[in-house]
View 1 (tube, rainbow, N blue to C red):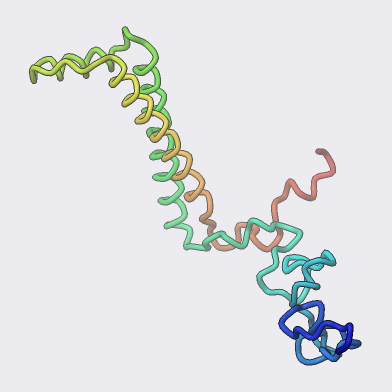
View 2: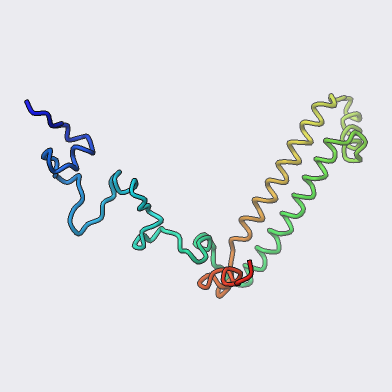
Length: 169
């Protein structure tokens, strides 16, 4: 029996021409090698110029933008910004109610519970106000990020960000 490994399922053996594994697992002349060896030499999918999914150096984040008519762009931008600002301000009011025992919001909620004959524990109110506040801030940030993905036709998606070409950093 020979010293050479014969397992053709092993990538090192299948690609090694000395072991007889020069089948279809190795690089083909004129083709591209997409096997495990290709990823190890620093040639990633984003680094290949022929890859259509690879981000471009200039304006790489622009690939996720949605180009819409200007009237829709104005509406989306206005309402998304308004929603985001209201959600973030509401979130901070809830955080204020969670941290201050004398907050007007907290007093109002405790008063509403008192009318129903329920007295919630202070720690429960603090936890609920905190979760509601942080969730509202995260929601507002998400709405703003998604709303900023919209672009009107001709808004410079092809040219990239004008600040990228600015020599001042």
